[in-house]
Image 1 (cartoon, rainbow, N blue to C red):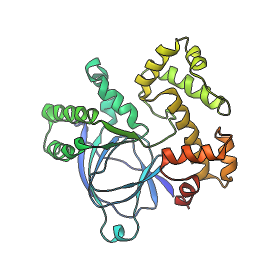
Image 2 (image 1 turned 120 degrees about the vertical axis):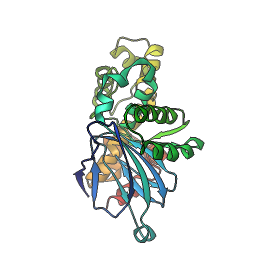
Image 3 (image 1 turned 30 degrees about the horizontal axis):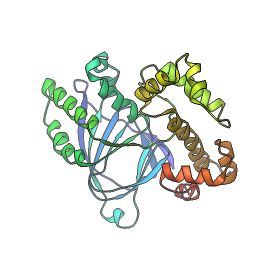
Image 4 (image 1 turned 30 degrees about the vertical axis):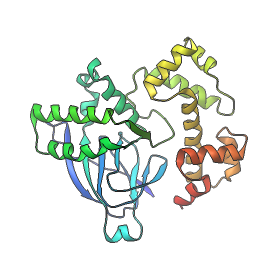
Length: 282
């Protein structure tokens, strides 16, 4: 598959755009500069978000950050009756504006941070989102902005949230304290074949281990251990999709010295074995 940059038309005087779409079978993986809240209203199939391949079905709700590659894969019955979805595009101009960075909106800032890796929502709260997106389509001006903030607030309150992409590369991130997070990321990459301990990473930022754990969890939504696993599995998934290297070699190059452990962690995060994941890209 090839990548295609998609332009999303959002009027200059608005912060969002609501669209209804029917999926077709595309041979390209799309990416765009805006945030996308996508609610599946009819149908099922498979999707690619970042380096993650998984299934989707009716009432599937995801939030995708800027420049994160994504696509739907339709097979069999889905090609005859293409799935339909309701999409809320949120302008990158809003997220980069100082207004959204005020203390009272910190939970919404963190939501957009996590969306850089792709975010899927699960649970009862999802059922209320369709009505709120539909309402937004008919609003303008300050009423539209207030309704948008209320919708985003409701997303932060959904307890079931999972990240899609397992390689936190900080390509266009709005992380607070980005320079510190990048120091941690670079350190992990340089030591990908070595054990990474909480004490040494906390020392890297001149912080006590407990303080660092709270800081890191608040900024990334993950523990250090999970962050390290995500980087390793993210590297592995890229090698599986972009190279012909044997799985055993990819296991070692992504920092695992035991193939059984590698297979276990890969499947627990990606919901399929390394071989199955590679097959999806063939």
